Length: 330
View 1 (cartoon, rainbow, N blue to C red):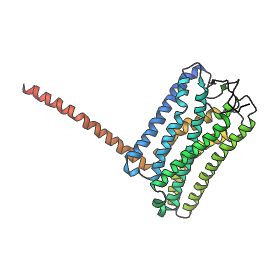
View 2: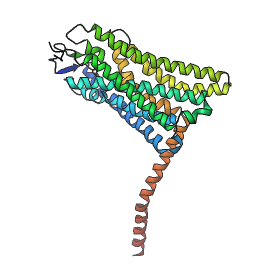
View 3: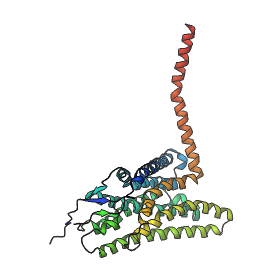
View 4: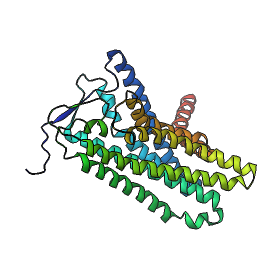
């Protein structure tokens, strides 16, 4: 028998976050506002980093790329989830489901490596400040970003290779707001135990290895500044506090869902919302509100655009005053 996908399921039914009709409108408004804040907030970071010459440094280059990944990560499923709140039949095609699985692992894998790259940047800046300019050149930063996307691509293709040819011939109800890989795999019409183990191992290697690298780099940084001065320690801890917060909020749900044995918990939906919606909205808040350079750059942009607006309105005011003078003369 040929090893082909013998699926007869053409679409999947998404149960969403809640079956309560009273909550649907609330969720629609709530997540619509959150999604707009995610897109606008991260776009503002990208605009600020690219337009302000004082932010043309490796740290902000990586931060701009992280904001782009956050927009992508929030957009792979959130718009459909918002639209489904107003729909009675929440369905997604088989190809659309596979596409969601592809993009979620592409963006999460890429973000993990970007966070490692940002931690490496802080390690070099704090532990090897005299070599920072030489090590963190533009070429190095570009290579780090390319590696992040490459790791995400390899990760998602390997995950799909385990699942794309699974036969789906009966159950098609996914108890989530998007095609979550663990829940979709359980719908296959065969014993998917081996596939589940391979997925856990794949996700576990990436999640735990990157998390271990991040924790190790933070420990090395703190030990290094411990012997310098209390002021240096305070500054380093203030810098790393934002990174550590993002790492915990991002890796915690991912490790629980994808590294834990394939057992469904009611809290899985909440955790999935964390790394698909809340983390992308927290990144711009954490990385900007605690950053003095970003605040100054924001003020520059606001002043620039307010002045441009006044200049654009000035000809109209002049014309009105000239018109009034002419009328008085008559």
